[in-house]
Image (cartoon, rainbow, N blue to C red; front, side, top):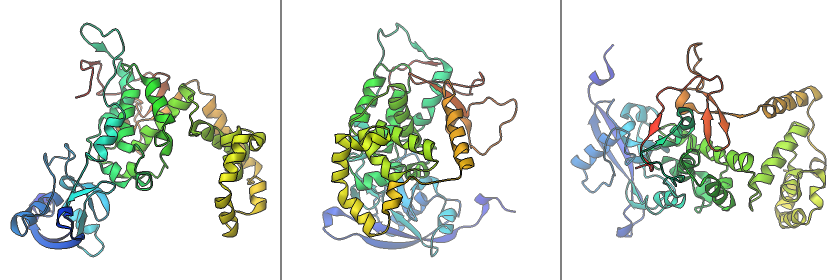
Length: 401
């Protein structure tokens, strides 16, 4: 069988979304047929179309090695790095065999496939103070960082700032002011760094902001979009856990109270009791929460939505008044999970960037880096005492260049 790079050139049709804001014309689709070996990248196909057919095609690129993040686009509706997407794979994923290419979403289009990352992506990055605020006194030579303490931040450090997660973030689509997955992942890179002196201040700022860490809707789109396995949503969840569990920050967005009410309702009933979630989030984590003035105010403001749900049959009066029921044996199983997790002295988290694929079985001699225990202050360690591989022992820079 011939190697992939030995296959002869084939024809591929690229359907590109074209748009030039300065022209005053509406966006339109433009098709070009190029001829390249199947293992070549979509970026090479776009550049060939520009060289041979239309020199006005706008595309941003640089390294062509999936490192710089410049060539982020959408291929067949999915966020991709153009230089890291093979033509044959793109054709196989196309509905009619025609590869559809569009600019990334949630950012203004400057021309064709080029978006204005300064207006959204980099603006959000600047929002989170993306540099180390060093602890004092600064050592004469260098900070000596424990190897285990750096395990957790390596995942967020893998970000190449391509903006793919921003492009597909559903929360940003609804609320453009949301800080966003890339910036929040970047924030965790410093919140989790033991050399940073402003962990509480950073977390409090992001927790109190209405468009901060509690504005994420857990849609997992950023997780799927990231080409480097950074898992931005996972970093947002780590920010939340550190803010609520380690620093006990009670925020104005009711994020901490909402989380407590959510977990308590599931522990008590086995399923979420939606009618109790809102009053407990605003009035207190008990059945009497609904009688607190803040809960009453929130319930009144939510009446239009509640009535609409009743009219459409999404909610029934009895379903709202009574909790959902599951068999007692199943409820005990759910509560056993709570007992096991809450009995741990330290929080146990996963870092798949260090551990590799979560489905891969671990060999007896392999270091147990998939599960790392979280200590207040951002320190991460291996639960078995084994050390993860290829993590820095010493870090000479005080800031990340």
